[in-house]
Every structure is written in C-alpha cells, then in structure tokens.
Image 1 (cartoon, rainbow over the protein chains, first blue to last red):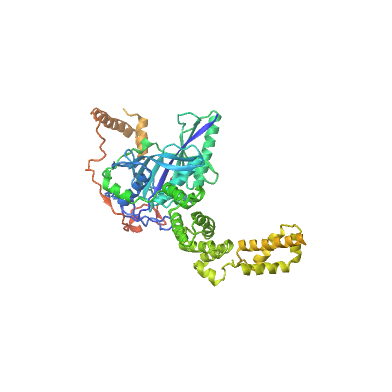
Image 2: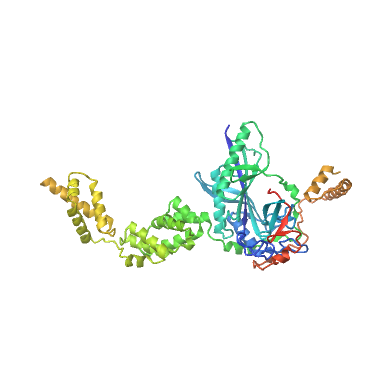
Length: 493
Length: 95
C-alpha cells in the first residue's frame, strides 16, 4: 500500500525585545550572562507580584500575524497553563489558549513542485521558561535552575497539518525563519534555542481523508534534526502499519547522536494543564489605530521581494532565492545594482553572479555576514565597472576583489597602485604576439601543419609575457589572425 | 461522585499526597463543587461570549525598557539550596 505523511509544525520563537514579556528584566544572551542575573520578583514568581504586558512584544506578534494574513483578535485572552516543573517558578506559564492573538493565516512556500501555501492555525503570545541543567553528583543526580530566560517573550506559531513531504517541511521551516528575520522579531538562531521546532507526524493510506494517530517530536534544534526526525518518523510509522501494528499517540524526542526518535515520559494531556483565563491580566485589546500603526511599519515580505527581484532585475529563480534569503543581502544587491549602472554595468545578473559567487565565497571563508563585508556595494560596483570597460580581465578582477577584502582599499587604488590595468592596446599586443612567435618557431611550424591545440599553448605564452595584463579577447584575436596568415602563406608557397 | 482515581489524579497534578481520609473527604467536596457547576450550566448562555475577566477591557502596556531586577544574592536568599549561583533542586527528567 502507498502511504501519505501528514505533518504539522509548531514553532516557538523568542521575540527580540529588550525586556521580558511581563516584567522589565532585560533579555540576555544565555550563553554569555551569568545565571540568575536578569531576574526580578515578577519572573521569579514571588507572591504579590503582577504581570504587565510588554507593548513591543505584542507589536512583534502583530507583525507576524499580519505577514501571515491571519485574522487578528481585537480582544485576546491570556491563560494560565498549570504544571509543576522547576523551570517555571510560578507553577504556571502565562500563555494564550482559547482566544489567541491571531488565527487562520497562511505561509507561502516554494518547493520543486512549485508554489503553495501552508495554512496557519494560530499565533499566540506566551512566556519562555527557565533553563535547567541536570547534574550527576557523587550523591546522586540533581538539577540547577537559571531563571534568566524565564519570562522572555515567546511567540508560538502553529501550522495546520498541511505538509506531506520532508521537502515541504524544510520549505516551511526555512520560510518561517526567513520571515521572522525579515520582520526583525527573531534572530533565527536555532543553536541557541531562540527558534525551536516541534513536529506532529502521522501517516495514512494515500487517498484517505482521515488522519492517522499522530506523534509529537520535540527537541529539534537544527533544520537537519527537523528533517531527519520527520523522515525517520514517517519511515517508522509506515513500517509499524505494514507489520499490522498500531501507532501509539505519544511525545518523542529526537536523539541527535543515534538519529532516532525516542519516547519521552510524563507528558501531561491538555486537560491536565487546567487552563483558565489569567486573572492578573485583562483581555488584550488591539484597536484599529494600533493595528494600522503596526501595518505601516511592515517591511517588504520575503515572497514580495522574491517576486520583485524576478520582475525588476530579471533574475533567475536560483539567484533570486539566494539574494532575497536575507534582507541585508538583498539591500546590498540593490545598492550595488544602482551603483553599477553608473559605472556602465547594465545587467543586474552580472552583479548577482559576482555577489553569489566571489563575494559569498570570500565572506564564507572569513565567516563574515554581509553587514561585515569589508567591501561596500558601491565598491563592488566600481570594480565591475573596470571589468566592463575592459580595464581589467576577470581573473584580475577576482584578485582585486580578494585584495579589497583583505585591505579594505578601493578597487581603483589597487588597480592603479599595482599597475593592473589590462592592455587592450592592439599595437602592444601585436608586439607580444610577434615576440612569442619568433621565440617558438617549432611550435608555430606544428600549428601550420594542422595541430590546432598548439594555438592555446601559444596564447598562454603571450599572456605570460603580458604578465596576465593583456586583454585575453584581443590577444586571442590577434594571435589567431597571425597564425592563420602564416598557414595561408605556407599553403601559397 | 468523583472516583478515588480521579481524586488521586487531581492530587498528582498538584503534587499533593493525600491520606485515605483526605481522599474520601475530597471526593465529597470536589463532587459538591462540580454539582454546583452543573447547576450553573442550566442557565441559558446561548449567544453570550464567555467572560474571561471581570476587569474592564482596558489594555495596560509597558514600554520595552529594560531595568535591572534583583541582585543574585537577593534572588537566591530564600532558596533552600544553591550551587554556582543557581537554585539547586531535586532531579527532574526532561519531558
């Protein structure tokens, strides 16, 4: 029997606010800050304290909801999710349950099968929990609690079970990460756990409309883990069903080392969380003015930029995807294209190729982001201008770019200081060609007798004589004219 | 009437240990509370949105300005056990 997988993703994204969700404690980098140095009475859950909602956290959540074309609740309700775990000092997490901030949106994704949308079920605000470290002590195990992360604003984005392949999961995961980064609400750092994925996976006979029993996979802290875990789980479930077995509804963790999903114990059911409306917070009201203000600040969205880059710059899909993956990359490209035009470079694709080829290679080598590139877009454009005018050839341009990277100097200074301007002057090149032909009479004779390959060798000799500074097209043209003339002379003799 | 198992489950969720007498007592008390809610359910609430709060819907927001909270010494002052600037607690498994 053929099976079809049904996959939904739940994403938790820490919002890039400066302070926490319900108190003014600073949001700190857990890998840098000393434990328990960004905690107050509120996020420590001390009696008598009251939460107050962070305005920016709501605005960031609204940006996401607007981008996903969700229905935004004008009145949403915070709820208490009760459970006992030492990462939650209050004994409950403030979340949203029955009346979330936003429902019913969609995220466009692109796969090898084209473009489609994955429906979004809900987007809601909550608070992150503290961090536990488990220690094996000499007298037995214990846990240590750091509350720096407790109360950091967290956005939960839940998709409908709309995906059927690992490729779609990848496209959705990456698409959502890209969107959050475009909106400036999340860094997309999965390693640090600032963006976390959970997958719901079930399988069913192909063509069936009913949903199979689903499992939930947690602890997916990279795209690789997400994709591998989903692929593993699809295969596992099909094997179980084909052997006549049944899928247990359970929560699994992804064991990165062994690359298998493993059962996790002790998970409580939703009704066990005893959700109820948070009595310490009134319903969250989003009025027209506020919503319009947030809407006015929305940047161009990834898929809008993608379409515009294809239309305005005529770029192929591959280059468009690379150049719109990140806003700073796209911005760099647009500035470079504008500047390149002033230098006579009219094809945006040429700028695109230099960026995605040479520039990205140099950035990767040094582990730099585009914002840290020592070569500003205007200078890349200037370099391409020299290339376009034939002042330098492609190889020289690559060398100059590498040196610009190294020294931060301008293209023009390097080309001039090092005398790299290539010679297109035909009389100079004529002279070099003649010198090479005279120095290698045997090779010339071979060519005249019909050995075509020798021409390339002679070309190399001329370029060497010119120390790489001759315009290769001009060299080839003049060399071939001379060689063919010699052949004709021989035939006539 | 709530079953013994239901009471024990609720107690587990609150991490409470109950004596045999308490189990019986809570069976009665919790059942009485549920019965009262059954009575409340008799009221026709068709078309009336659920009440999430008795406060007037008035959004009070805080600007996103960080302020230093407690010092670590203050924060940990009440903790029964501390190690390396962290709360030390009985072992808990990931779930």
